[in-house]
Length: 165
Image (cartoon, rainbow, N blue to C red; front, side, top):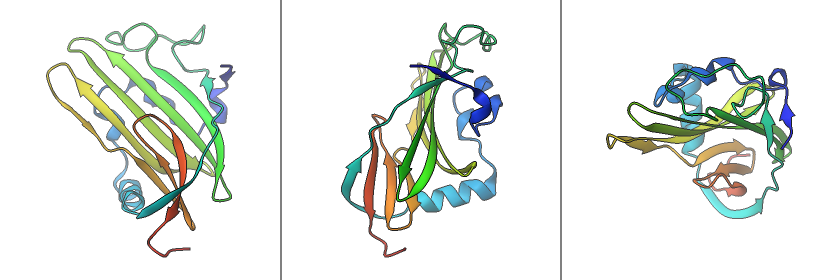
């Protein structure tokens, strides 16, 4: 994987300081729009997208990256990108993850942008103290189709079943 300049990514650079649970913090107006997208009914699979992931230059595995918060494990946090087209719309997808200690905790987050605007998100988190959760799959309505990102990070295009265009 090659590194991609962070400047090409609409993600706020503050993501590197997220701890478990903070990745769910989104402005209320945006959150409501994303939640409406989650409720879109989906039908059959139309395609599985062939995704060419690239490391972002703010990924901890890239040489010269600023140090993460002290509780993060070596090689964490991680950030990779993909640019895809679904339903005729160009999308930028970020996959973010981190693992930290004291107590042990981790998260995996997907963010989807269209034209620089956040149009979808979802993720999972867990803690060694027994707390965890998930709001996957990500669903992004794109006219007559829906982009779906599930537990394994597979990007699928599915039929939209609620009659919207």
